Image (tube, rainbow, N blue to C red; front, side, top):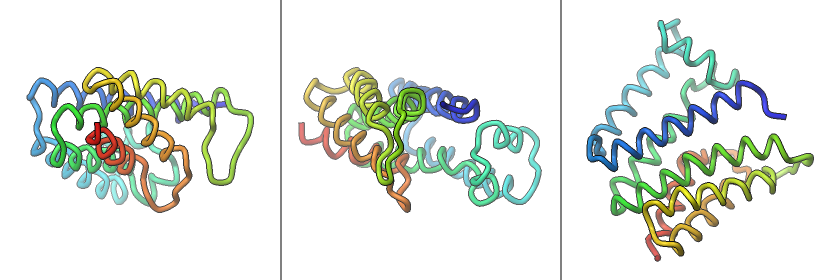
Length: 186
């Protein structure tokens, strides 16, 4: 079963990602705006780790995992921004937007459906059910910006990689880069 905290986190993940994609698509944001958001995120992370910051600390309390509140508040959004900055800087805009959509939708849906549908736990894998749901929804999100084959293979490779438990690599960083690299081949 999915906890209320995880559900809130994943919904915020989707809202944040879709907002970033819309702003980039409309050309209201560029890589420098993303860098500014990243810098603000790093500042608030440091402050929230060491002080009680109005509003920011409340957000951390409502949306951050307890273990990250003490060690690295805002870890997920910070790595989300780093991954987004890398793909926006290195790839054509449509591939960057598709890869951010794969991260935004696929990652969140895989967590939600994995917790709701999966009855098994695996040592090195997340759930098959969540991964399948994540691939499907990520594919639909990517298809808005890229062709059918790029959307299929970008979603498939990135979300399959996301399903593997990698201790030292954050999937918010890895998923958009793998998706963009794969889609650039198509």
